[in-house]
Image (cartoon, rainbow, N blue to C red; front, top):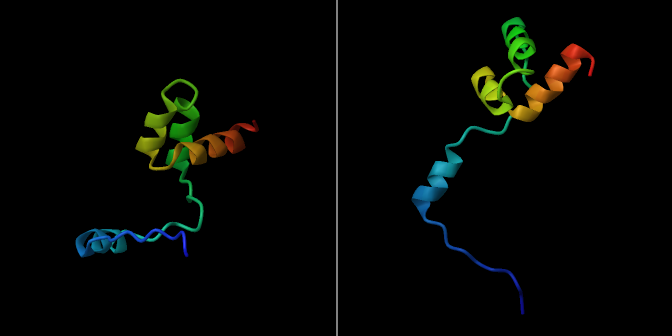
Length: 71
Protein backbone atom coordinates (compact mmCIF):
# COMPACT_ATOMS: atom_id res chain seq x y z
CA UNK A 1 0.00 0.00 0.00
CA UNK A 2 1.34 3.44 -0.97
CA UNK A 3 1.34 6.46 1.32
CA UNK A 4 1.10 8.86 -1.65
CA UNK A 5 -1.73 11.35 -1.39
CA UNK A 6 -3.46 12.24 -4.62
CA UNK A 7 -4.83 15.78 -4.79
CA UNK A 8 -7.01 16.95 -7.64
CA UNK A 9 -6.18 20.42 -8.98
CA UNK A 10 -8.63 22.14 -11.28
CA UNK A 11 -7.54 23.06 -14.80
CA UNK A 12 -7.95 26.82 -14.25
CA UNK A 13 -5.53 26.77 -11.31
CA UNK A 14 -3.03 24.68 -13.27
CA UNK A 15 -3.29 27.11 -16.20
CA UNK A 16 -2.56 30.07 -13.90
CA UNK A 17 0.57 28.39 -12.56
CA UNK A 18 1.71 27.32 -16.01
CA UNK A 19 1.38 30.94 -17.19
CA UNK A 20 3.79 32.21 -14.53
CA UNK A 21 7.21 33.29 -15.81
CA UNK A 22 10.09 30.90 -15.23
CA UNK A 23 12.25 31.41 -12.17
CA UNK A 24 15.36 33.43 -12.84
CA UNK A 25 18.43 31.24 -12.78
CA UNK A 26 20.81 34.20 -12.70
CA UNK A 27 21.37 37.04 -10.33
CA UNK A 28 20.22 40.60 -10.86
CA UNK A 29 22.28 42.85 -13.09
CA UNK A 30 22.74 45.91 -10.89
CA UNK A 31 22.65 49.37 -12.46
CA UNK A 32 24.57 52.41 -11.26
CA UNK A 33 21.26 53.96 -10.19
CA UNK A 34 20.27 50.93 -8.13
CA UNK A 35 23.71 50.90 -6.48
CA UNK A 36 23.44 54.60 -5.62
CA UNK A 37 19.96 54.17 -4.16
CA UNK A 38 21.05 51.14 -2.19
CA UNK A 39 24.08 52.91 -0.76
CA UNK A 40 22.05 55.95 0.23
CA UNK A 41 18.91 54.34 1.64
CA UNK A 42 19.80 50.82 2.83
CA UNK A 43 21.33 52.03 6.12
CA UNK A 44 18.52 54.45 6.98
CA UNK A 45 15.24 53.06 5.60
CA UNK A 46 13.25 49.85 5.95
CA UNK A 47 15.06 47.15 4.03
CA UNK A 48 11.85 45.55 2.77
CA UNK A 49 10.71 48.81 1.20
CA UNK A 50 14.11 49.69 -0.27
CA UNK A 51 14.32 46.24 -1.86
CA UNK A 52 10.79 46.50 -3.24
CA UNK A 53 11.44 49.88 -4.86
CA UNK A 54 14.77 48.73 -6.28
CA UNK A 55 13.08 45.66 -7.72
CA UNK A 56 15.15 42.99 -6.01
CA UNK A 57 14.63 40.70 -3.05
CA UNK A 58 15.88 41.75 0.35
CA UNK A 59 18.59 39.06 0.39
CA UNK A 60 19.98 40.25 -2.95
CA UNK A 61 20.02 43.84 -1.71
CA UNK A 62 21.76 42.84 1.51
CA UNK A 63 24.41 40.92 -0.45
CA UNK A 64 24.92 43.77 -2.93
CA UNK A 65 25.18 46.35 -0.14
CA UNK A 66 27.87 44.22 1.46
CA UNK A 67 29.76 44.02 -1.84
CA UNK A 68 29.57 47.78 -2.31
CA UNK A 69 30.67 48.66 1.22
CA UNK A 70 33.16 45.85 1.81
CA UNK A 71 31.13 44.43 4.69
